[in-house]
Length: 132
Image (cartoon, rainbow, N blue to C red; front, side, top):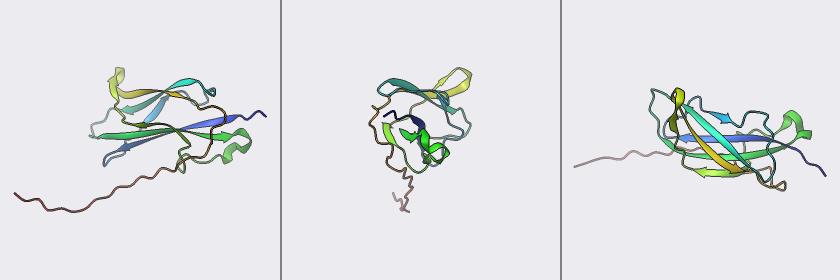
């Protein structure tokens, strides 16, 4: 049985106190065909900004969607799919003042489960007193 997947790449960029504004996936380009079991490079771009930010971490996942589901595919905002990378995000500056980092990832074999963990973004704080 041939099972074709549209693959949605979801990259969540967690930034302390401020979301990384206007970050985007440089490549692969939308509509690129990725093959099961092969490597691909994902470039995550964070444009230069006068607003300071601290990169905390990133999660990159593949969320499978059978073509038969068409536009009813699950939203990557609700689940991450199969996690391919979690860890630090350390973009470096490149020509045209763009900050980016490239990740070499492997597309799972054809038997991967399209569902996955949901992104949970939380911020907790307490008030403390400081003294000499």
